[in-house]
Image 1 (cartoon, one colour):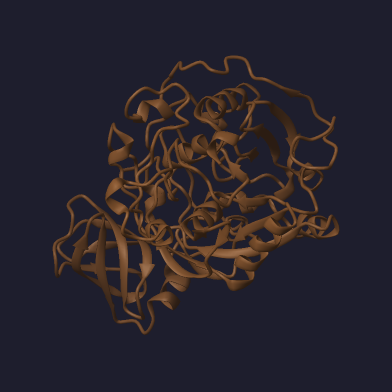
Image 2 (cartoon, rainbow, N blue to C red; image 1 turned 30 degrees about the vertical axis):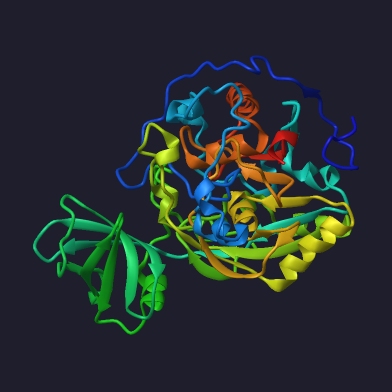
Length: 425
């Protein structure tokens, strides 16, 4: 069968899923922890101008999250979109607790966002689903050993998730304790280090580390790899390599860009042999990846800002792909958010920035044409992002199919290849 995604052949059967167009909603998966729950880091430029923003450039608005989404692709939703519109039933046994034996052993569910047609495949088929004209964009962030366990000097256990290292002694961190620590509270940490609480900025605490030379070095020695909360086990030796991409090089994330976990060196070499260009950017996945969507009306949700960098070479690669008529294939929602946050004209602006942008149905994508991604949590901002990319009903139908076919979900689970819906362009 000829693939809808490129010039390669796909030895699979395409079909329109049963129940496409249905708006039935089912139960949710309860969060496993308090501050580590069912959310995500998805952010990107929404669909249309807010009337009050006419005095700023679109690129500037993209970077600061000042645009407001308009529901032009809500797939039947009338009025404000609500959290229950992004719900599905997931049996707990489908949540992958361990990676596949090899990176490339994952299954691949292909979704055409314009038609809703699904194709079951394997991840090793990916090179044949792409064209030599296409460009793949990867996120090269590396996960920090960002979790620390300690005690409050006044008594009681505490858990830290260091979201951002500010300098040699200062960080922003999520602090989990029976009672939120006040300013000047002292936290005793492994290796004799002390963290002093300076202030609180929304969900994050500003901490000063004392008794150490460099906090980044300290985390590498004493920190714990921050596996997601739905992996109900302690980190093991294999996670040190398998919860990092093979191309990770810029340390600073608290969660892996999980779509990239499927790629091994052999797959990268096969993509090279197929003539498919690769480019890299950096988006450091922040603490927002563990924050739930607390508002029933999703338009009220606010994202944590995340740092990103678009190299000049990547901006040029996007321009070349556009010039030769190829697609920009984002590897992961983090790559997609960085690209869309830097969108300018038909390409992207190089440079450093922060994005706190939240994508929902109605958003018009300006850069990404296709997306490699994992399966995401019910009611999460990542599920909202892929719903914007391929249509909510198409995505929920694909997830129902994945549950029936026993695909593995979340960070160590299987993958999807999604072609953007025409309505989202």
